[in-house]
Each structure stands twice: as C-alpha cells, then as structure tokens.
Image (cartoon, rainbow, N blue to C red; front, side, top):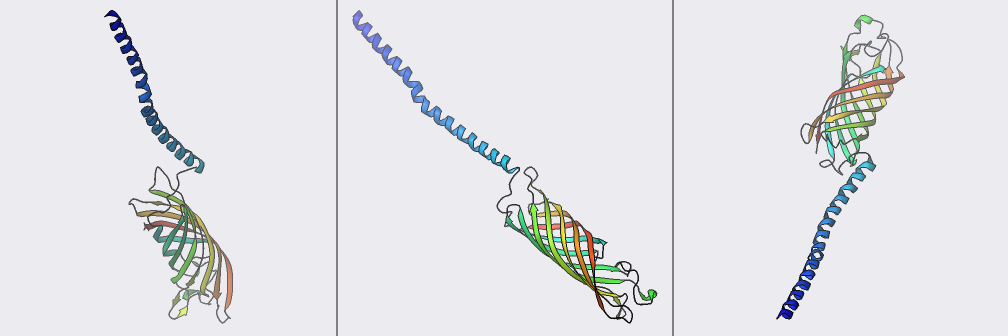
Length: 251
C-alpha cells in the first residue's frame, strides 16, 4: 500500500514538472508573435523618420487636389529705370508637374494715367508743353514660367514659394482730341521676373497671397516728335512688382 502510494506520488510529480515546462514553451510563440508585431511597427516608424531626415523636410503629395490652381492678380508695379504701366490686373494658371514643381502662365491688362513726366520723358516733344496734358495708358502683358513651392508639415495652410517668369507686353500711350499729347506713341517690352511670395489657405482650396518680384528687361518704343520722322528707341528696364492681394483657388 505504501509502495503504491509512493509510485502514485512520483507519477504525479513527473506529470506536474512536464506541465510546468510545457506552459512557457506554449506561451512563447504567442509572446514572440506579439513582440514581432510591435517591432515591425517600430521599424516602419523609424524608416519613415529616416526618410524625412534624408529629404530635409516634409514632402509634397503627388497631387494637390487635381494639380491645378488659378489666381486673380491685382498688382502694383513701377519702374526704377524705364517705364511700366503701374496697374496690372491679371489671371494666372498654375499646373503641378510633380510635388513642389509647378508651371504657370498668365495674362494681364495694363493701365495707367499720366503725362510725359510719368513716362520718364524730359519733355512731351511736340513743341507746346501746355498741350501735353495727362491721359490714359492701356495695354496687355503675357508671361510664363516655373514655380517651386514649399510644404510646411506643421503649417500646411501656409505655402511659400519662389518663382521665375519670362514675358512681354505692349501698351499705347494716351491721345487727347484725336492726336498724341507726347512724342512717344507706344512701347513693347520683354522681361525676366524673379521673385516669390506666400499663400495662406484659410479654406481648403481657397487662399489669399502676397507676391514680390523684380523685373529686368527692355522696352522698345515708337517715338515721333513735331515735324520729325518716326524712330524706334530701346531702353533698359528695371522695376518691381508688388502684388498685395492675390486670390488663388486650387482645383
């Protein structure tokens, strides 16, 4: 009887030891699997972080909405050297090539009002200075170029950019009473515009902005003084555009 009890006790002890040994072994795959999932997630986060570190900042999405934007431009421009009509009202279309790289084209109407001194002339050139009163200048302007836009991860509604454009324009000087009131008749221009600005998108697709740009180029003008033959004069042009109110819609 005692021997039977000892055998039974030994059998139970052996089975208990096998049970205790099997419990961690059975739990190990589950624990290892859970640990693998956490490690994988951490690896993905780390890879993402290193990608951002290598690029030096947050990357633009492939497309912003559908990669299009149209802006209403209401600028003021003036020439430091040479003359440009001071009011320029235009529309510009931007197309997203890839991430921060955009192309743009635009057209604008040009307006101004003034006399020969406004146009940078020493005199009206028609003999009677008193007849050289002020009048309205009107014309147009075309341009195209490239824009690089930055995307700020913490402030995605603020979009700063740098821009370069090439363009040209044409404008007619004022006539009063059916005749010119200064010797210059019309001017055409060619220019390079370099500058930048910022857009503030208060709504998802609608924003306001400010642009600044320097204009470097030339004007080609037709001039004809009193009882003289018409001549064409080329002048250096250096000016600045201040675009204080831009409305842009992304679509």
